[in-house]
Image (cartoon, rainbow, N blue to C red; front, side, top):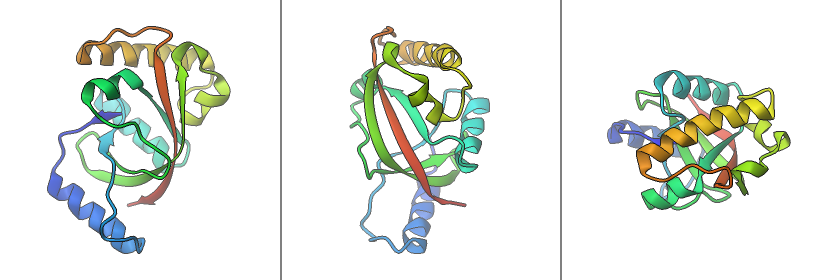
Length: 158
């Protein structure tokens, strides 16, 4: 997941609409507003998969959270998913967190991301992603690196 430089005004407006339409407490906070991936093509494609119900999980580097000083998601957290341009499109709720070494990932786990047909394609794509993220954040990708695997469900979309 990639933090975005979004219009805080658009995010705030979207969040207020979500709270009103779902009858949630007005003081409810969201953990993050973000888009998936590091490129426009993949950010928008993964958002599409979320919106059609195919993508129900995401994998992140534990080291990335540590370097950026962010807390790890926990069950019940709400987050706003945007497109590449930062336009909010849905709210997801974390339903499960699994921390697993990259090398111990199984297809039964990673298939919930809805992106790959095999474990091998997941490993290839996520090796590329984590290698690029590691360069940007200043850590080294290794096969035993802890991965935070976050299951979620869409609780609101426009």
